[in-house]
Amino acid sequence: MKKITLLTGSAALMAALSAPAFAQTEIAAGADATGISGINDRIIDVEDAVQDDFDRDNDDARFGNPDRREGLFGSLALTYAGSTGNDESQDFSLAGRVSNNAGPWQQSVGMLLEFGEDEEGDKDKEEVSVIYDGAYYFNDRFYAFVLGRFSIDGLANGDQLGIDDDADVAEDLGDFARDGFIGVGPGYRVINTEQTAWRVQAGIGYRYTQTGAQKSGFDLVDPDGDGVFVREEVTDSSDSGVGYIVSSRLYHRFNDMVFITNDTDYLSSEDSDDVITNQFGVNFQMSDQLATRVSYTTEYQENRPIRTDNTLGVSVVYGF
Image (cartoon, rainbow, N blue to C red):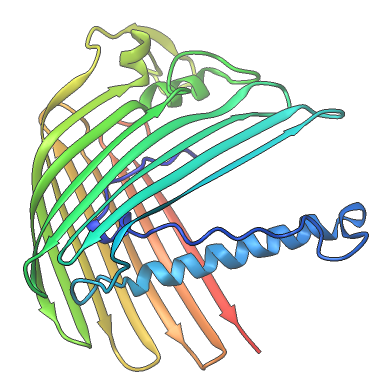
């Protein structure tokens, strides 16, 4: 199920890419041919994903201006995989980030390009995104932020690919082909203790959106709910206007073993669909070796055929 990319709080977008690390494709002689390398790569992917979940909840900007690397720095990463033979597929990704930190002023620009073709040779991903995040910390409680994002989804249109049916095309038409927002505003830490931290921020800016239907000039609708779709002309080519974003980040530690987080974002504008996300997480540090995180994420977009997506996530780390 397709997800909608959301503008989260300033801390979420400012995480820098880690320093590049390169390793051999096999962990031992013969590992490639026996399939060990492939499984080892997947093990690393799972470990990284779980660690990201915990790091996101730990949020190094929770209590104030985080102690970050000073000056100008950045990184660039590219990956490509193409296969032939029993199936033919291609996947290409390019990601980069440039950051500059100078005392209370921190800013970052990031980009992401993702293109892919499935084994049938049909495109299954064609996305380009650019983000900007800036923050100026006046003190531990009060700060100002700038957030910007522009995303393009090349598959959000009325083109039918492979075995796509009308329902698949209708879902693509309901997604954003283009979605951009730039906004500024203040942020304030209402509560800022070691046990509880709660910060809120609100901004005003400009939002531009174009759905797949607006891009293609038509929509597919199921008026009777019986799976029979009919074509409906769409006259508006895009939506733009004043946009608003409100965010909340709540952290509370009950004891040395349990803490909860609740992250909420609301993005609204005059003509474009409202978008709301909320993620509630419970973290358990059972021992020095065992930690568990359970999260429940809700993503809402106004006027989609199915407006709300819900995701339950469970992450466990055990070391010995």
